[in-house]
Every structure is written in C-alpha cells, then in structure tokens.
Image (cartoon, rainbow over all chains, first blue to last red; front, side, top):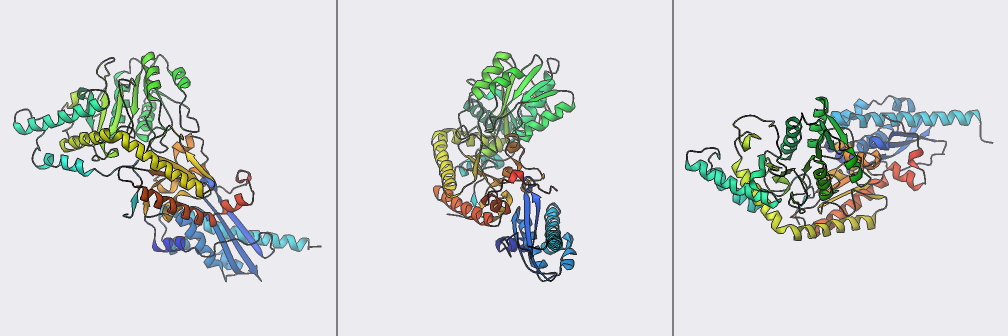
Length: 133
Length: 404
C-alpha cells in the first residue's frame, strides 16, 4: 500500500512522542483501541486555564495510526479544550490523505483527544470535590 | 549489495535466468500446439511437454503419466479436492483437512460444505502440528479424502507426510498434499509417503508464474477425479485447455535445478535462517518464533515482535521486502488465520513478520536485514504505549480495552 507523503513524514519524524506523569493534575490521558485490533493510542494533554499547552502520544499501530496521533498532538496544542473537542476525524483524513481502509485510524485519534479531555475534566472535578488534604 | 532486499521467497521467486533461457525457443521457434497431431510443430511441442512431464513426475517419485499440468497450485488444489469429492460422491462425502491450509484448500472445502459435504478441520498445536491420533480417529466409513499441506506457507511448519500416508493408506482413503512450498526445497516422494494427489507450482521454485501441476496416482490405487474445466479433453480429460508449452518446459528446468541443488541449498538457507533468528533474539526481548522450531521449511522464519505492529515495522524497513501477518497489509481486516489457529493472540499476530529466504539471498543481506529490523523495532517500541505498560509491569491482558 502506498502512503501519502504526510503519513510518511509523521512516521519518520513523529511529533511529540513521549509521556507525561499520569497523576499530574494538569494532565489528561486518553488510551483508546485494543492490541488485538492492531492499534492502541495513548494521547496526553497538559492543560493550563482550559488551554492545552502541551501534548504527547504513544501509538501501537500502522503508519497511518502513528501519523494520525502525531498530527492530533500538533493540532490540539494551543487550543482550548472546547476547540480541541471540535476536531473531527474527517479533518485528519483530509490532511493525511488517508485511504478508506485507514479511516479507523483517524477515528481513533479523534477518540483519543476526547478521552484525554474527558479524563482531564473528570480529574479536575474530583480534585475540586475533595481538595487535597 | 543491492537494495531493496527481497526476502519474500515464500510468496514467489524470481525466475532463474537458466530457466528463462530454456523457455525462450518455445515462444518463437517451437511454438506449436502440443495437441496438434498432424504436423511437425505440434509433434515438437508435444515432445518437449512429454520430456518435461517425465521429469516432473519422476522427481517426486511418480511418473510423467501421473502429472496433470495446470495454471498453478490454486487450480491443482481445486481440481484435487472438488474433482475427488465429485467423483467419489457415491462412496462418501466426508473430507478431512486442517485450519492452517492455504485458502486454495480451505475455500474449496467450504464450497463443498455448502453442497452438503462434511469437512473435519483437525486441531493444530501451538507449533502448527496436527495430531496423527486425531487424524486416524477422524476417518469414517464415508471419508474419501484427507488433504494436508506439506509445508506451511506462513509459518513453515512441515507435516509428517510419511506418517499421514501410512494412516490414509491403511484406512483406504485418498491423501492429497498441497506441496507448493515443499517441492524443490525438501525431499518429497509420493511412493514412500503414500501420497495419492500432490499440488505444486513453478513460481515458488524459480520457474514462471501461471504454471502448476497436480500429481494424480495411476495405480495402487488408481485415483479418479471429475474435471472442473471442460473443453478439448486435454490431460486425459482431467484438465482441458491448450498446454502452456514454454511454461511447462520452464517448470521442468526449474525443478531440475532445485533437485540438483537441493541438499546444499537447504543447508545454506537453514544456516541463513538461523543466523537471522539468532541475531534478532540476541538484540531484542519479547520475540516469539511462530511455527515449529526445527520441523520447518529451510527458508522460512516467522517471528512476532511483541508490542510492535507489523505494518508499521514493514514501513520502517521499506528497503526489505517481507510479509506481515497483520491485518492492515492484507485485503481483509483480520490478522492471519494461521497464527490464530495456532492460538497466537491477535496482538502478537498483528506483530508478526515472515522472512522468506531464497537462492539469491546472501549473508550480507541477512545481516543488513537483522540490523534494520532491530533498529526499527527499538524505535517503534519507544513510541509503543504497550511496551511502556509492559515495562511498568502492567499485565496487558487485565486492561479494559475500548474495542472498536
């Protein structure tokens, strides 16, 4: 299968690979996919005042899955949480010129963003309800 | 060393220049139709075909008169299974095979199931071996055919053909083997192994594509089958269609070369296979060999690299041509059904790579491949959330995954 130039670029030079400390209150972690399906994405965001100041990812999956998550970290950086929630998988498909069989990679990336934000908000709510002693 | 490196010899092989040379005159000079009985063009073509046929038959322990020439192993497998099933339908409608056969065996068997036949798929163990005991127990009074492959195309595991042949002969059922990966690489003898039908193809042994053969035993017992293609009644009525004379001549030359070089080549390729395996294992943890450790094709190495997805690995080693059991590389979205049948988890099936070594593979290429694979696996593990979790001591089987 031929990959688009952008997919190859993200694969060869992935942006923002790495991890934040999960327990950090500023951090939200999204872990989506399953090993038996052939792709797992972990996307993490670091948030200050409702704004994503940094993002990191790790992905087990094909080149298109790696590229989708790499692109997702680039796109969420600098966005507010609400802006990031509005990112659609179709935009990723378009940017990376993903073929139909790879659309699920973009869906997974969108899910990862949403899961990370959800995790961040859940943890914020929890810490507000029971402030650290 | 020339890049890219071809390491997919289980998929196909380049045609050996010596084979091409042998074929050439049959395109432009000796171009007659082997079925033309009334002129010299036909006679010459027929002579070349008969000579090739004899070599094909005798090399596997039979005779030229037992060879039906086909378009490839897929056709041979279809003809053997559908042809025997139809011819012996009054005797019985039960067939025994295994779940790791090539699709060209499984699909015709399943087509027969749709037509009211019964098919028993034997169990395979973690190495891809069947149980002879289960085979014998599965034979019934209405069993007409046992079809088990000689060497597996994905994982390289060899079947104990001689032991299987003893059981089928004793029980009076026909034994078909898909020997596509085995003929030319390891000794195959239809007499010693009591094989009644055998499929093979030229393009896996440095011959041309589109050329295959089905061995059909003529005596003790005489095997009969119904044709699946009808027409001019070629190949004693079993396979109509004008013979591919250059292909047939090339097929015989290819097999002759494989036969003459078999012992030294098997030894050389096994050494290369082991060299590659050892190098990978020395540098990387979480590696799993798929298939039997020793009872395997000399040229096949199939390895799962834990926590790395196969397609991304192939992408990272793009100057090496290998094949992956991962879903994304094939037309289907499922990972390899062969690995699945062995009980390999889908996560490791997605991580598998098949290396196929061949006549033109060098030690230098193997070392380059090992280095490239090791580098790519390490890089991808750096960005693998699964490897990270495993390093943290998390048991991945206990994680609640969000399935898609």
